[in-house]
Length: 126
Length: 126
DNA sequence: ATACGTCCTGTACCATGGTACGGAATCAAG
DNA sequence: CTTGATTCCGTACCATGGTACAGGACGTAT
Image (spheres, rainbow over the protein chains, first blue to last red):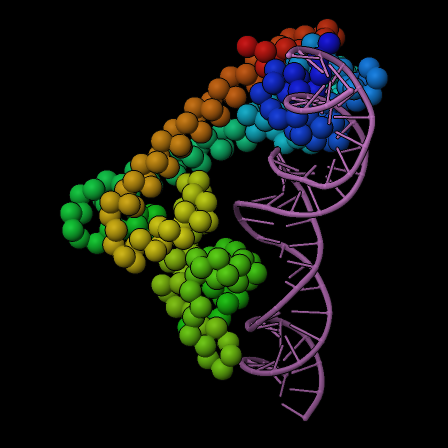
């Protein structure tokens, strides 16, 4: 049984973040032991899931929904959300790659330019 | 000579956004014609640059710096910023790709599962 | 038993990037 | 010359994802 501090440590977040997640309904209000919150492994798993899902670009709202679905075993909805997010990830990656192209062009022209004008504005013009 | 509304339209943003950028120093306060701001092509270029740079992941603060550098022709610093951002873009793309892996796994397992438990939590566990 | 660290609740504040609104002035068309 | 759209300025508000107190109550080690 962990205190909030230990849970935070296990999840790589701050204590305030745990409480924040609780307020948002992402983590439940756990059993108390004399006023002090006690957490178990499921809480650690849940917290780690939150971090992972965040990395996948889900908002906290969406993560809450995923966690609720997990409880309710709603496959269809979970898949739908995953597909939507995968599509957005594709888009985001493509966007970033386009940005890379532009930016590399800027860097290259800037490097070549010697003492000539640095075409920062121009670099993004195509 | 464009009014603020036309400039906003040309840049694909709202009028309030233009004023917001002016407050942040990203766009200059332009010449007035009887109290009304008048903009020219350089402003349109500048605005478009801002949008592009944003897509490349620069913050408004950084974009301001880039624009200031462009004025001062500081190659070295501009290149430095570009390289830093390129490195971060690489990282971001890699992160998103990893997220895709995890999420695809979730979707696949969820699809296979039939009426069995949907391993949403499990999907992110590796 | 006294001090230090951790916990509690509640509220306030932060950065980022805008968005909205009130109330006055001004512009363009009919 | 009136009407409707646009502009002006200033300030307030929004969402997202936290972060930081203040002011107490605990628990543990010395």
